Image (tube, helix red, strand yellow):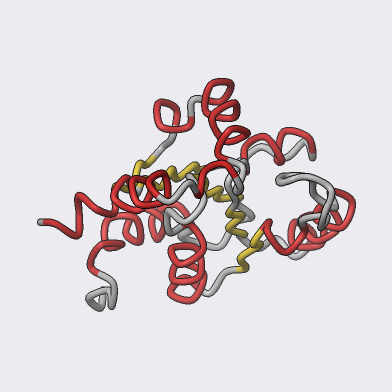
Length: 160
């Protein structure tokens, strides 16, 4: 395997290469706090693995609440990819909650942590305006860090 361009993602990339070997239809979900690095990770993995990435932020209903999605449109895209028998990565802050509503069972769950970023956000009062309260409820119900197949702690990796 060629060395990853993003060494902090090396372990995650290797895990997914093994999971997706042979290209069976698999659903990989990435969740974590806003600004934790989910989209960057998802884009990198989709590029390196030649799979589709669904960024749930693109399906947000604007001006109707922080995490209200156009679920019908998202489900159409997921169903289409399932028909093509191709893997898909779905990333979003409350991704497990959204997939439950869509009756989609993920095959692999990655939870991204970036505490260094969240400390800065909290200091700036960012959490009040970007759904951190809703994210806290999500964490309480789904316990993503505890139940994830893989936890990626970016600041820890970047410090070493």
